[in-house]
Image (cartoon, rainbow, N blue to C red; front, side, top):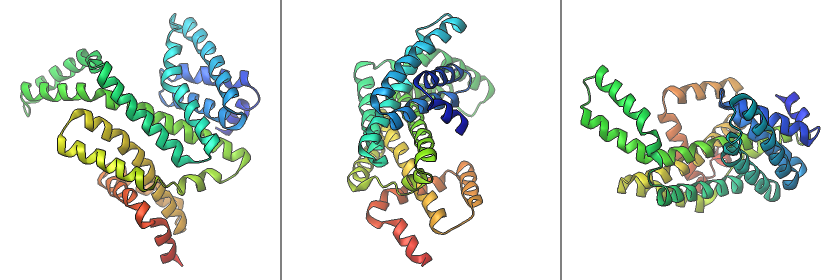
Length: 299
């Protein structure tokens, strides 16, 4: 992966080539789209917002050309600009100017919350675009299982369709965060070895952010509103990052083998409740300073 970063830093044309190529590849392998946006992040962090924006424009031209040659649909490139490159460029610009990973993630979360509000307000039928494939899935489930009645399946389908704006925005936010982390890691490897690990492991979103997140999640639980649940999904994702930061910091502070990190990730995959416990700890962290408490026990 580092050879790719070296190639990206050779010039804007090289960076645009990688971004455009990975964007098209992302239509088949979605993780490639994250790498594509990480190119914009790296250029913006290292060379500044203006260079990052120019690279975005060049990447747009390249992606449009590739999309025309392969799919005869150059307009597909606009999708990458709106959903991947511009969010990545914006959050990278904030990170470069503030040198605060926490603030960058908070701004991204605020923008994502605003996006959810805008979609529900101005595009209330957003989820209806997926009605047909979901109808087919519901029909298959109804034929294969007698556990749920058609009415129950239809009710679940309607709920999912109403929730899709939140899922859509959260997925874009998740991809942007991964691209930001990858771009920041690339930068650290070349200019500040080990810097990203320290930055991520010390991530602290603060008390105000925690209180706002808790309020949104409680309103979603008490009000049982799909709209509030969509907002809660966005802030939940933010605190997944905080929880993973605590996990990585704990492994480092206690000087445990990196294998333990892999083991915990596997456990979280099969037992999601472990992740929920970490998220609860991340909400309490601004008041408890969990990293400092763990460090004291080690001493």
